[in-house]
Image 1: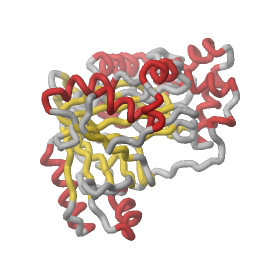
Image 2: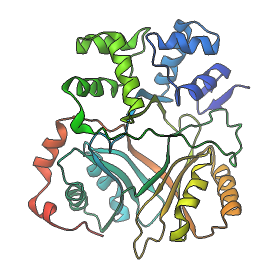
Image 3: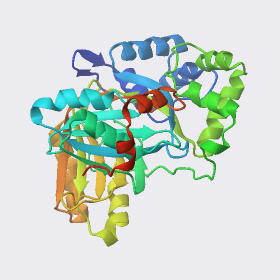
Length: 358
């Protein structure tokens, strides 16, 4: 595997291998960097130095738990907003200030701001969207919640050797009847700690345990139990896509026959290049029910994937919405009091009793 240069950063073979591993299987063990070192053939000190350099170069965003928002009682949705072109940055900043907005991008479409928002149990998602529509001075907003999830999980091939037509097994997600109402106070404490960016030290879970006043083993077992119960999707890294060399971030949207949506959704989700795949509602001026996120090193590579999708499915009515600016990308923070403060300051009775502006 040859070295590759991304911007001003050169990634050697071990860098690329490390980045590929930690996106899907960061070790939940007392000494995770030593476990990574065993796979890479390096000492834990060398791996930590390598990891820290990749963080300093802003290629690794963070390593932490990825929880299932719905299982923790939060409501969430993708939202598409249209604002006047000369106000996009201003409006996006207002939207990004909401504590539950985790992703916010400018995209090359009439709906020029695309964002995801989550609100805690008991809060009215539509009211928060109404408030942000009003505060941002938007001309139109569409709320596009997930009707069916086919796939979720970014797995960027940093080596860029995988074919864009390559298929992959769709990860199974545990289903459970457990909800946020079932969480004990102790478990809420584990959620709060596991959602934090992992410290770069030999025994990082020991630091979490010390803050909670429990054993290191208890923290690791709690994380494993959350995964088994479906409350946590995985414990893994999120990369800065562009800094890692993935400059083309396209949201592919497809107009599909209603009766074939599930079949085609599973087909689309089976592509390794597709990180997220959902069924969402349609509107008279938005006929695209099937959404598939495609990350690639170039637009040409995105087109390779799309060409294969079209050939396999026969679908021709689609759009590729490329992100042209990233305003915000973080993980949702759970059990955070700033939600209540934001709602008290910005959500009005009219927002709570009005219809979502479309």
